[in-house]
Length: 605
Image (cartoon, rainbow, N blue to C red):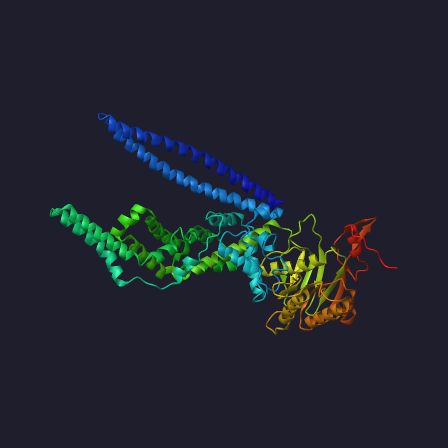
């Protein structure tokens, strides 16, 4: 498989770089230790062996060489971190191919909203989820954008949104180097995804410094230096000079009390958003062709100045801000120079120039990352098909399967819902594949709307809103029975179907509908729900063990098609081929399954 071989090769290539850089860093560390010992020896010689005039020149050369090695070591460390992040990029690709959930990020384990139309039923979020198998993002906003695309309850302008995303995803699927560079730039931040909310609140703010501070920051340090120089020239006593310094420091400390919130909002220790400059630079420098990507790229340039350049300017200011982390600088040098006020003034100028555009830049990173995550999914599954839009409500798939099932165990089936007001009634034995078929329909629909390829040989799909009732849980705390919980879920599906145009029709997926009541009421209730959904333009599939519901096939003619799964029995062994067949199932395996588990069942008579 090409993707697996590419990922293994990339992991080995960057792993070798990490090993080489670690070896060089160890040698430099030993050299620095040797130079430190030499420096101590020179100091000892200068102090104890007075005639040794060679000690000071050697010490100076030693210090210079030590400083050079510090810079070289820092650069090696940065390269090693980037190479390690690249290794992680390829390892996560292999983990996605293997469905090794424990080796993949778990930050997407967000719970679905209780009233979401499909997220919980289709395993969109959490461990072993759709999100986890397509999430190659490294930032908060990349992950949030991807989650928003997958959980969208409306396909948006049709077919523009889907096709714009699809073109972007298809282009990025072939650009492994760009996706690696983007992920590496973002992944160097840390394994955790930094939250830029504090920085964004500051950038959107309008609070300005008092005019007195603006004047004071310019002239007070100059006046202090002039006064000290004059006093010294006039022979003022040391006490006077000390008092002047103390008063200047006190003035600086008092003035700085008005700006700590501003400085903390952008400090590298409080927010690492400025480190996304490399991601912006990667996006700015890539020659895109897809309209969506070109639009995002254009958003990163205003008045001839790039977003990466603006963030580089912000990063330099933050470097000055973080100088105050040194206690000596913070309590002595900083107040004398009114350092905090100078930094606050510089930040205020930056915010006035670029602050309003910061959120748009980070959102652009999020959209590119989301598209890159889906592109990785496409790269890893070249056999998957790109869905084609239909101008009418349609879901017609050849060779449809669930993408979360490994390819060696995946069984594909054709599904045809050619128009609004059409449905499949799926019957079959326990464990035969009914629920998996419904989930395959839903998961591939949301992948299609997000712009991703689908697990099928082909898919033609129209503008639809996915709505499901599959996993229903009762609640003892809320006094909600299983049946009542299911009725509430069905009510949400029906309410969606009743929404008038321009709301798209509903693609409904109902699993074991109303199985919390007796057979007679189940048939009557389920049949009424299906009739109502079809009458309001819905299309979808319903699975059931109750063959009474299959009468809809005769009652509604071509609007409802009965299909089924069945088991194969050889002696005492029972197997499933998961192949969808026309018509109604003619067997049941419930008693056989119970007996296979050691539960004796005696049939009367």
